[in-house]
Length: 419
View 1 (spheres, rainbow, N blue to C red):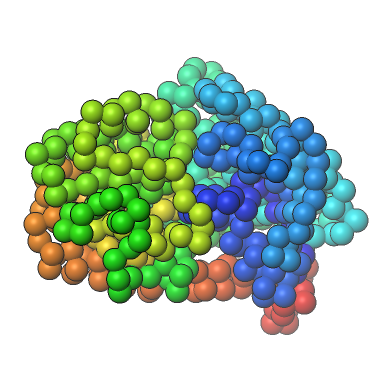
View 2: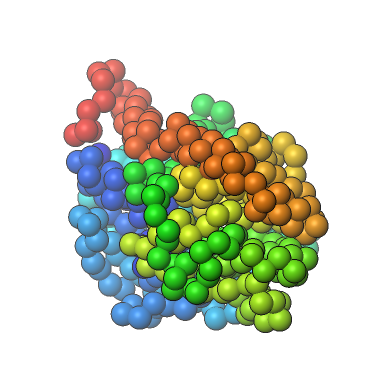
């Protein structure tokens, strides 16, 4: 199988960020498929192009057997709603030429990740001309989220963009999302049910696993051995509702045995640092190297995952899998019966979005009950192994792609890896 991927984020150098496309491409390559990627230079979540890369020129490299073409793009330092749109459009425009050049290669699947939605027309064109599948993966509904969070405004603009989105998605050969609610939303956007598939955000349960020792980060951060560490690790952006962390920390200032550690970067970092400046129980650190990811997850006694109510079911946090796989209990903020609530409620604690008092009470409950922490941590680990295993999820997705290719070509024999 020849697979061409169009994705804005690929092969970041920090743990747990933007790894979806990277892990999928490398896994497929290991199964004997040929994968080529068209992407931008690494920049997320700092909104700063990483050292050694340029946003002004085309470049190629090979990463773990995957051929990667990086294209010029505009990376705004302080992304507003309009700047984000222009940023996404810049990648969509500069990626079009190298994508069209792949027609000589004749890919079997052209796989585009949204965001950016604007790259999807190129993916569709190349797929149609090469006779391959056009597959869209919606990692989050960028348009819905942008208008809900007021990053973009205007009823007319919203109608126009959503109409454009509907026209694209309804014409794809396949559309995947990471959650059932997001898949149902795709139905409402005109995608036929037979073309839809849910591909959950997977986790490598072998590499992210419970530790049988104290994390080295505890010593690095000078945290007492008997302190309870409440950890948030991920992007520091608008959809997370991160102000809730400092609000809860403020309510728990008198509990010197509870320490909040926030690990990440993003455009909300400065505001979070300002909020945390007067709080002695909050430590703020940047993203850590990939090879330290399990060590970082093992630092937590309690994992924290806040999410704004208005981001529910347009985004499924990819960081959740690693939290559950670490064997430590998880506290999330989610409205009842959203997908995030459905996943975590049986194996963790869920509180109301925006309610700092409820969040702090849940943290105190776990901090004071080691047996509860152990029980919920074990339940989360079991769920990660049974439902979020990387090998299980990607094997099923590979089978779906192979089957769809054969159906498109009118072949009846069982699919093989050399399709």
